[in-house]
Image 1 (spheres, protein in one colour):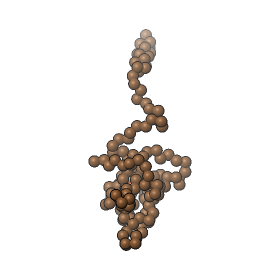
Image 2: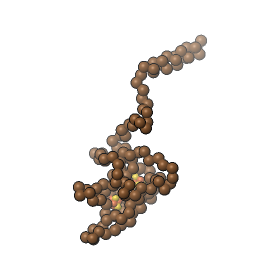
Image 3: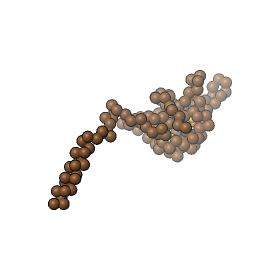
Image 4: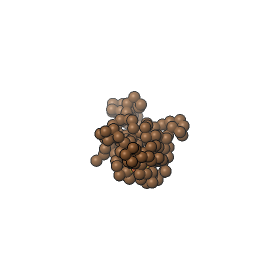
Length: 141
Ligand code: SF4
Ligand code: SF4
């Protein structure tokens, strides 16, 4: 008798949920907006003159606990320090955000891009040119 009652209770719960709005979404055609503080892949930030803010100080690379950042510095014609190459390996990155915190120029930010699946280890390495594109950054305050 107890089994029948439990069975009916289970069926009743299932039946009730037939009329409740579904909480699942049809990803990837439907996407949820990540939380405000979500940390996705890095984004290189340009100033109003479309110039990179990065001065290749390497603080981000030094703070990175995963050694995921590689930087080559350079100088422009006015002897300002600039970044020649900048690579982030998101295969190593743990998205801790320490690099963002360490940057004195706010030259990099973490975006909300999370669709980073790929088929090879070389595809996890992003150059600064690749980090320039993507949806606009909304800075969390
Ligand atoms: S988010 Fe963390 S692990 Fe990833 S590159 Fe920055 S400091 Fe390194
Ligand atoms: S991103 Fe920021 S911390 Fe990293 S090298 Fe450039 S200026 Fe320095």
